[in-house]
Image (cartoon, rainbow, N blue to C red):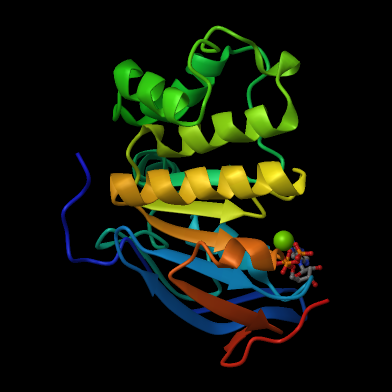
Length: 228
Ligand SMILES: Nc1ncnc2c1ncn2[C@@H]1O[C@H](COP(=O)(O)OP(=O)(O)OP(=O)(O)O)[C@@H](O)[C@H]1O
Ligand SMILES: [Mg+2]
């Protein structure tokens, strides 16, 4: 069942982040509603991955706030935040960190086992929706790059997260596979009522988004610069 709520899935308020003398984010705010897909573009080094790490609670901001589905999470302890993340956030990265010792189905079930949410039937349905029915018992080592990334998409959605964060999710794929994976991610997340933040360099992927935000030197800009 999709989530039914009018609270933002993801709400970030005035995030700043610095590494030593280098300030990477200068008060970045955004929110993503359930079922909404927002793309973040920007040149290399503009702070996209830094922002995504804060939004996913993998790191905490120097100042500002991060909220998932109405709960502030940047102030939680590491352990509690990790538990909330397992339940509320699905992550897809360029290099789809699958666990090589687990088969496809067990990889998809990892966030379910961590959070107690979702179940094997839903995981199998998601695998079928990403075109991997019948491959549940296969180990990741024999899958193609596109198949691995489709497992990562199913895994990101398995625990029915409020938020899906994707950092160059198709960066290691060829064009046809990249579009197929992006389309699956966006369609499945919308169907599940998750809010999606998609970081990409690829103009062809931003057309799957309801809105695009452009990061330049750690701030959102109004105009869309040409990055090529
Ligand atoms: N842990 C860290 N320690 C020091 N500097 C960092 C750290 N993480 C990121 N940076 C710096 O912050 C800046 C932004 O990095 P970030 O990875 O967020 O960029 P990006 O927009 O994701 O770039 P790309 O498109 O190349 O992935 C870079 O100058 C980077 O060197
Ligand atoms: Mg990056």
